Length: 370
Image (cartoon, rainbow, N blue to C red):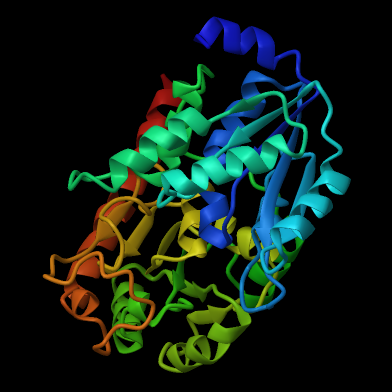
């Protein structure tokens, strides 16, 4: 199907159902593709279909998808259910019609077996119109057999749509629904009006992604000394203890929003001027909001795949023999790849993104005067 045929046909569908599995970051990296689809077809309803876990340990993809104002409906199924239970649940929830289109956006490590399995599964749900499977099949064969640097996941998903004939354009930031009133109330409570803020996320569910907390303490202290910026910690409830420990070393200029809801966390990040932290969902959320990020990456996954969207960011990583280990729990503590990233490197990166932000702000002022 060429681009003209695709555009002509897609505009006539009643609904576009986007299938994407995953949790916090896995969902957020699909937002640029979703927003690009909505801008092309504003009169077509977008439905996001994803899996959920019974455990509350994870930030479920369905909850994250509700941050996207372009999605009209979120449909989920339990990952623990049998294939027959999943089929019955989705058949009842989706009620597929002949004017519905499925767009398949699988995880980057998808196998060709999974692509075929999923194609048959969605056919049994009565989908007549499906895009993305040919592209996913080719990708599954490619990523396993190459040592090349892979694209960012945000770019790959846009590439699937483009290869399927949908003329979407790249997005550096996306619209997000957030609790602005809550964020501004916290800013007032903390006395942060008219004070620049650096958001910091020191946690991660994976030990293999955690930069040492004592280095975050040093970075925060030194950055405040250089710039006068206040520091606000973001993260889940499980990171509250770490955040409080770090803040105890920042006397009067550190605050914690750990444990806030997704919409509240998005509000905090929207009010910050910059972000510094590990490779987490909060990093992706900050980047999608257009906040320049200093992202501290371990070497557990393929290089570049999970880098934040946009070109305002600085990613710090190190080369180690054990790269792409895929470990959740590293054999060393802290992981060697993170141990090699120094406080000075992070501070230098913060200087770079902060100076670029100030220059961009000044350039925009001059442009408006002209």
